Image 1 (cartoon, rainbow, N blue to C red):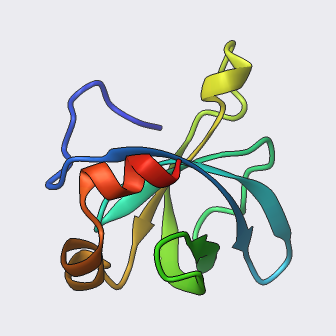
Image 2: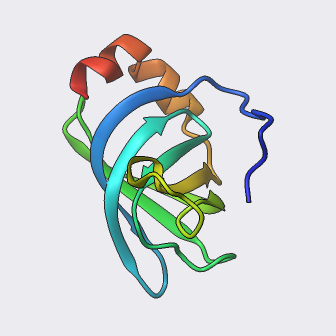
Length: 114
């Protein structure tokens, strides 16, 4: 589902945060492994249905508040990954976190909380 060309507009920051992806029919537990204002890699073993709206829910470690982000499934390697540590989904945020992310999180502060 993905391509080898990196089309990201924003650099990603490595984190290791517990999170949930909530869809109309499921609640999927996992971890955010990297994050940017536009999307995230969510390490999990259950693929949400294609075309369904998603909510990524996680605790902001800097503000100690719950963050709920509207998103959609960008890609999945769950059924094609031989490496359990890289198994998961790419999530594209439908309302960008850019302003929130850039104003409050720096790469260094995110890594300090990982």
